[in-house]
Image 1 (cartoon, rainbow, N blue to C red):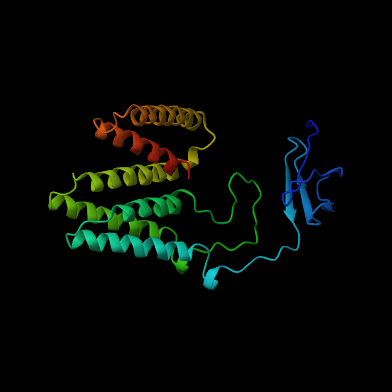
Image 2: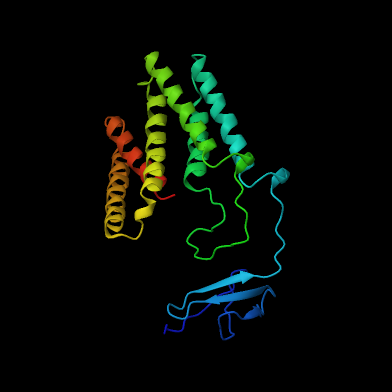
Length: 240
């Protein structure tokens, strides 16, 4: 049996003073939200499922993630077109692309909430823009690969703004791809050790990069700083 613990309402964080039993329904005395309870008798972990919750429709009634996908494609296409026409890509566009692509690759969720063990078996998996799974990610990767090849052919890939962007983007996408490739080993000893190793390496990279910034030596060690930034980007991609 588990040690009794204190539970809180997910809606208002008020303390649940009722005795919790698996399958019961209760209403929070503070916010009046109604929940059904899922209780694991062995571990004491509890899931509260809100009852009669009215879900708001997605923007423009498109599948979840469609607006983000369209924004990502539009800005990525703008970047590719600027590169293909030989013009300079604005720095703020690179920053914006890293933000939205990092979110798109690393943090987009579908049916399951982060860290949740409760699945909605009645939910229908909808991909953005009604496209097959993975199409948009493949399109983005292919577009930036082609753009990188064009920059190399023109001898501009080593220019710092492009080099910074592509190295950090490469780290993020590589981390994401490897995480998906080895997801079947999750829970194994090797997978656990690899996670500990990744955590140790990324902490070391973050602390050393912080030292370079605070000491003012990052400009002299710009390539080392880029490698450290790529390591950090790789970690966040791998934790998707």
